[in-house]
Length: 432
Image (cartoon, rainbow, N blue to C red; front, side, top):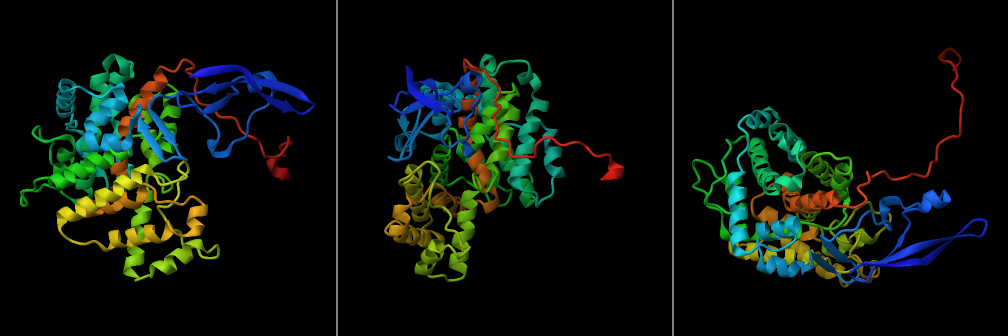
């Protein structure tokens, strides 16, 4: 990163000129440093949704939306999916380097040792209604971890990194599986030492006393890859929420709970569920793909084509390409066909050759295919966002820890442009 002193100028009313430094990051992208703008001039910037605002410096994730690039710690997402499992990628995001074979074994051991939940937490699960939304349960249970494991309150996570962080990474998986069991009215299945991270989760989800369930290797492989695809994505809504809450010196559990709640929204983590609902509607009603495309293009029609377009990517989402192939692999292993996937493939083919979509940079995003794969693995739609949260957890932890080393250490506190009434006098209630 380099800094050019006084390389940019802002002309303010009254012909006042203000000079700003220009920061060039390691990838050559430039930003204007307005850290002291309000202090020096009294002005602030107005940027709804922070579309043009950089809130921090970060070495965790790099995205180039115009070129369709996504990298974790410098490693291309496709390379990581091809050569690593989720535990290796979690280690990379949290600790900064890919693990050696010995470190990988040690990390897996820590995850297994810390996968059990406090026995009293079972009472919490049983108190939730069976039709309670899994994300509500997940958020509440993650926040509850700070009550059952309070040592984090008194120690910086760096001092006890392998215990505190690995505990959360492992127990979140167990919480997610137990949430599903409660929803289905089933007894809980404890994590098993002999299973890998993803195989353990699937076993805790689907094993019963009468089915002799063994996690299918194709499903374990697919889940590993799907979690890697979701592991981080720069300063998105939920990650920004984690960093914002963390900036108040809230503990890791509280900060991650904020991320879970942000992810819950239909415009963020719930997007793949919206895609599934859309595809199911198209299939069940026998809608022709041509009519679906025309409905999506019509301003008068309320129909929305979910799974296309992205806030950052202006070309094909690199994660969507991988997710598409995963769908095909899982389907091939099942030895069957899937009308939802067939419909999705046809929609992609038509849309990516339609000028309307091309001119507006509307390409399939990661949500377009991930839900179909979860569906084929037997995971209900209501659990999709929970699995998204499991995948995003290493990124949230990494950003929380990175903020702890931020030299500014400032609490997040955006400014506003006030649009309310001017000063008014209070009229006594009897005279109103």
